[in-house]
Length: 265
Image 1 (spheres, rainbow, N blue to C red):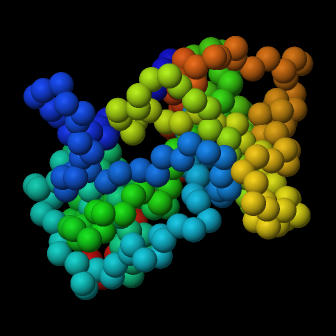
Image 2 (cartoon, one colour; image 1 turned 180 degrees about the vertical axis):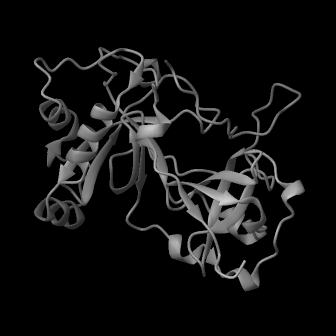
């Protein structure tokens, strides 16, 4: 069962044959699109088809607010895919995007700088300052290249937990993007990557080097198959990165939703 993330067009619509400009409207916050290998940590794991990573030089702490300095939104003004400030805890707001509005006054948001989903009360959301909209998401969703569910349809709880067990062994990873011949027009096309778990010595070697190509670390894909006790290592034969499908998952077992509220409200 293929999964399609929410749409997020990169370019503005154009009425002629000229190159469309990048979107600069308030409803678009761009993502980091890295085409060379890079260091990253992992902030959330949904499935092999959705891993949220973060670059070491992120500015997440500079993109938060306190509620007393923010303008609260009315529940009736909320809409799907809207950018808002939402409570990370009782005293801090973080940048988020609305993914769904439920009839019981609960809103599902994705914290774009922290990577995780949350269920938040509809009266606990605030306007995002325009200055905050100029900075890209500080987390990036990626797809682990060459993998598919054993049932060819949906990621199981066992597969997701096996991946988490592998990733929890490392603090940093070497991420190698895979390429496509297609022009990426929408940020919902998650980048396909190969990942290597790094030791502290590996990280030091990368940081001290002027090179951009390394053969360091442990293959996450191979470790995943070993953790899952697969009898044969059989990655998907893919030539173009986007030929690899993105598979869905069981939200009841693979995603933790945290209800964030602000004390005294």
